[in-house]
Image (tube, rainbow, N blue to C red; front, side):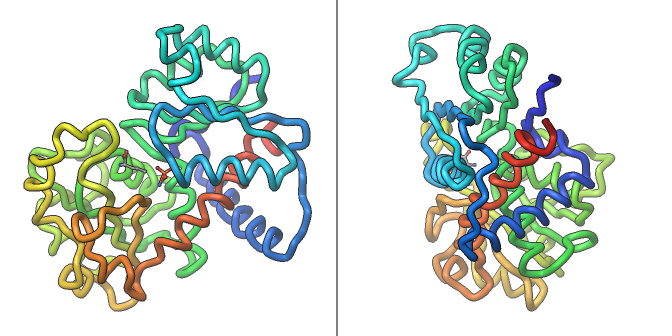
Length: 300
Ligand code: CP
Ligand code: NVA
């Protein structure tokens, strides 16, 4: 079987992504109605995490539990990966015993190396390049609250990090207009001038007429040494009420969390009626259940 990996949003066709989101909304309704649906009995999902996580770990573990399967959480500290066993050898061994693997690590290239030897589907649980699982939840949340995102305007304000890159991919797959406000020397690595994306260092320009405003931390995992410098650089890009007031009146605010209150976003905005961060976080569970079903049941 050819592996069905989910390393970036571009790995799934537009049509399949759209259906996956609709299925996530259906799975959410089913679990709330107490419907028991266990398509992954006797299946095991391994979670190989070299970075901290609350939402990603909990959502995958609970999702597998709903589906009747098992999970195995493996941190670099407790496996031989942390002592230098090659990624490719690890991939061959672990994939010979489990049915699917989620990896959260630093370098995207390490995930590609892992995939080259894995005999089962691999899901990107976050790398320095992208965080595609988060975008499934973000798109699901927008669609639940506002309907189709096609043709809508999304403003990304802040660091040009893995989440920003994921919004660039999402704008292509879900056909929304994206504007990005980030400092001049922080052009996102996946930004291409040919894409129809507005890139500016002025958050007031980016946010004009936006339907969705998104930000993320200024210091991502692995950048802790640059903390003081980054806080100074990104200060003009804080999402606050003044910025939100320039967006469309019914605009919503998202943040993948964890959020640094009163740094990249003020507490007023996080706790305002525009903020949908709690629904967004919960939707990690439902969206990833739809992803697991897509990779392990439907597409198998
Ligand atoms: N948003 C997100 O991926 O959160 P965690 O780092 O807690 O998994
Ligand atoms: N950009 C953040 C996202 C955390 C979910 C990081 O990579 O640390």
